[in-house]
Amino acid sequence: GPPNRYQVGRYNVYILTEHQGQNGIDILIDAPYDVVEKYAPDGTFANAVNAVLIEKEGEVWLADTGFGRNIFTQMASVGITSADVDHLLLTHMHGDHIGGLLKDDKVTFPNATMYIAQIEHDYWANGDHASQQKIFNAYKDKIKLFTPNELTKEKKLLPPGIQGIIAYGHT
Image (cartoon, rainbow, N blue to C red; front, side, top):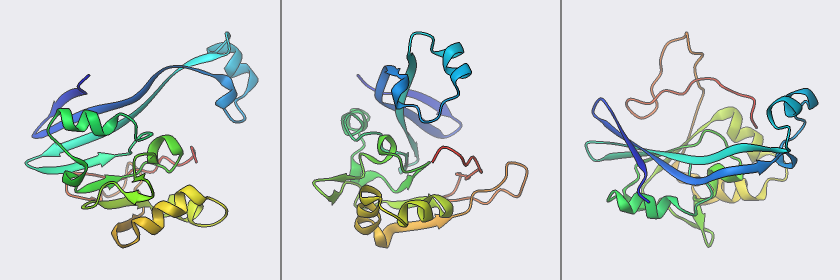
């Protein structure tokens, strides 16, 4: 169905849902036994994969792209195509956040600038990370690296109205 929509000031915020359901604990890496025992005693946990679309006065941001399965249909249901996206904001570069960036090895957001934290980019640009490096090559002229701020520090904006905040650890 259509994505959930929220009004935040002059911004329209849409939650694009790629997956909602239960996952097995086998996908968790180094999860502490006591935490798994407490929160997933049956060996499963609730999991959701979402992307966030933000629109204000014709300017469009997309935070992550999920697996790239449902987001395009959900975007179309609110009158937005992948060509309308001006800014791609990547929280991190795991497959469930970058899956919609390429289709048949071609860029799916031809008019978008991609914003990636410098430390995240550097992690995936070095070593054997073929999927991420393929994305870097495809979007090479459209990537902007930034350093997120500590929450208490000066607020440096990415695209107008967007701020990166340090929250490292998942990758």
